[in-house]
Image (tube, rainbow, N blue to C red; front, side):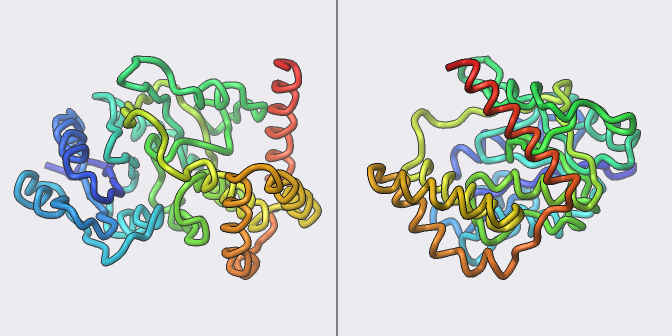
Length: 295
């Protein structure tokens, strides 16, 4: 029997009980994917739980919390041509991974597929779906779905060779809003990034928001600008965040965090090729227009 063409990488830290429920769902899939858990230095019983309860799951124990880069380690360790990402609180609809593998087989330029996401506790579509489905980039004759430059990290499938070619998730960002930079880098290498709503993932996040997450997202959005966008845009957005920081604690935390990582971002700075920068601006202009219309 040949190995399945698709694997699943889960990055986790200190969420053993939630992870166990996700692993039960993934191992019950008809596709029987290879599943790898990249453990980000957990101090709870995560590693013991995986080893004892799920002997068929590969465990990659990392010595410390490496954030989204844990997914890079997982992709390097697997050898399946296609790899889906899950979080410890997300999983895939039965048949979704088989559909994704078929789409990759049929479209050699496809580098990343952004899936449709159902918020399982409510049974509704994640709000990001509306954003992706409205992407002004439209379709391409050699790609499925709609071209995008964003996705949800727990609901994406990548071509392993494309992911490695683009460098994976960037270490400067660590975690939070890390998806856009990977989408930019894939597009800059000529790979297609698309939203295919027929491939479905489920996400069941815990109620409420994680402490400090808003500041983390704003920090990484600014760092992404410094890493890949033209200098005038980076300066303008830094000035805007600094102005907001005078009255907004979250903005102050974001700005402080961005300045701490800015030297590293400048070392890795590589401006996007013109055709990708143009696509990014089209998306931003479209969103600004939609917000203006809504207001």
